[in-house]
Image (tube, rainbow, N blue to C red; front, side, top):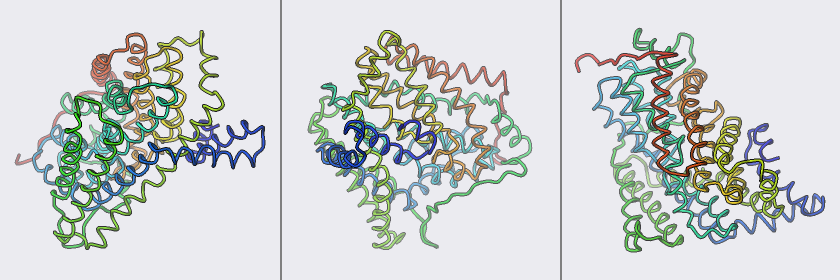
Length: 497
């Protein structure tokens, strides 16, 4: 029910709740009232009150406050603007957006709105199409965030992993599992690898080739009759006040200094750090980093003290929806375990589904759900409680399966027309949204195809070195598609450079 409702309604929160509610009603013998009270008392309250889960919820609030002040102070935009003066060709402009997107790693939704308006005049001047700029922004939003363990994405994913590992009696920490699964995130890493490859080689194909050819030959960044979207959020300071790059650099430096300063004495990264110590270091770093940004905003008169504090609180409030998804995801997982859902599915597939097919099956299923719903986090919440027990029971590679869940879920968030980051990338690039989807989808499918082939191989060999195979396939597909359905687009250098 959770999967079907998520696809039909595109509302992950309602889908998770009704799926969990149906499960509890079954456990309660079909009584709807007892089922509701049992869901709240025996699952929602229990999951939210768990010591690990509650500390994760608190940590997400600190992260939200940090992202709110750093994003809306204008510091990240000022940093990107300063870096933009170093690039004077089409290829260099694409490298610039790629590099800046990696630097602004702490927010997938804010990154397109920060970098898009900053680089749009530069890419227009260097004859990079708006469709290409939107693709660059989208490729450096969620595909970057999903690889970072100490921001909201990583914390959320580790929370889901922890829940399953505890139930299954797996001693490995969720942090170690996340790091071990990193090289199996073929889709995210393949997407990030594709940007410099395309920029350097110049091969374009499908609708993107037509858009790039138009812009290089005519200088028109959009198709005639296109309706460009504009940022719905203004990330600017008060009139007459210029934000400074230090308002991003200093908070990020404080964040890292606190995290490593508190963890290195515990033996990090050579020794496993207790989870409570890790979460305390993260909360401390995000809090002090956010406070340093508040001080800089007030000192440089970008915001008044009350305005700066409001930005912090607004950022914290923005994660409430995510917290609700987390609690309901944990509750759904708890209900599924009480019903024996994973055991039942394993029983159906045992003897009919080879273990090596589990990562591939999970990736394809996750890609379908996330593309239909536009939600990667909802896909993670639905699939993780099923995929990990299935992998353990069938003898499939667990870390590769986790990577497949993440890659499949990311696919939809990256390219679905109803995904928030897809929409925000169109806004940030001032690009027609439908044109962005049409030009991006073939590129996303190329990386997804390379990922699917590699997941079929990793089920048999279970080696992180297969990441190199995935990247090699991306390279071969880019050149092949460029020659079959496009061509190499010549570079362009601005006059006087």
